[in-house]
Structure formats: C-alpha cells, structure tokens
Image (cartoon, rainbow, N blue to C red; front, top):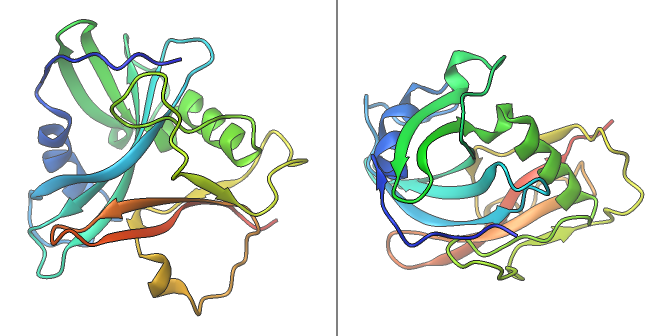
Length: 198
C-alpha cells in the first residue's frame, strides 16, 4: 500500500497545476493561469509500488462561477517515455523521494490500469492524505464484476454535482462516484469516471 510522506514538494502540486491546467483543451476558464484550490480526491495503489497514483479534484476560483476539475496524476521516479507533451505536468522535488516526474494520469498506463481495476471491483480507493486507509466515500456504482480487462474508460475532466445531472440518461452502468467541496463549504458528489458504452 502507498505510504503518504509528511514532507514538502517544491514546487507544490497546485503550483504546477496552476500553470498546466489552463493550457489543456478541456479547461473552461479564460485566463493564462488558474487559481486552484484542492477540493477533494483519492488515491489508488500501484501493485508494483513504483508509481504514486492520485485523483485530485481542484476548484478554479478565478472563474466567475467556481469550476471543479478532475486531474488524475501519476508520480514517477523517472521520466515516462512515449507520452504526448501535454501529458507532462512537471517535476517536483519531494523531501523524501527526490525528484518526481508528474504526469496526467489519463496518459499514464499504470494509473489507467488501476482505474480499470477499481471499476472492476479489484482495487480499493484510498484516502488522499492518509497511509493504509481505505476511503469508503469513493464508490463504484453499477455492476463492475465480470468486466473485461481492456475497459474503455472516460474520465470526466470538468465535474458536475450529481444533482446537476439527475435528468441525464445514464449510458454507462459502471461509474466512479466521489465527493468534493466547493469554496463556500458546500459538499457535493459527482461522477468522476465511467465505463464508456460499447
């Protein structure tokens, strides 16, 4: 299981994301930088213990109406080859582990493999900032057992609360649902990832 180190990262994850996120095609703000605050998320364990896996929910407070984004991240001890340039979020100096190469998890094969395992019911979501502690608030809705290994998974980048999508048809029977907190303290839940319909 992943161990959460009580240490520093320089630059911080939010500092890296403030520069990286506005450059992405799915960013809905209009500024060159964002004003991000951490709003929620969870971790998954890499069975090999080599890659840190975090699904972070951040809220951009620079928008007129706050917008929540999901950024899956893979933390590695060396550069990941064969990924597009936009997949690289940046490097950070970790107080215990040294230099960490941080990638957009959508392009990291280990991150996506564990997300598929979660959707199949074969991985347990972990709390974002505590070691060896499952997070029961992260749920897989629908029937995950019996799903094949090569699931086509859609990660929702811009998040909406479950109430906002109540009337929408559910095309997928299997989805990851988790919560986050808006800047005013309101706690909501929404769909972070779904198995894309075949």
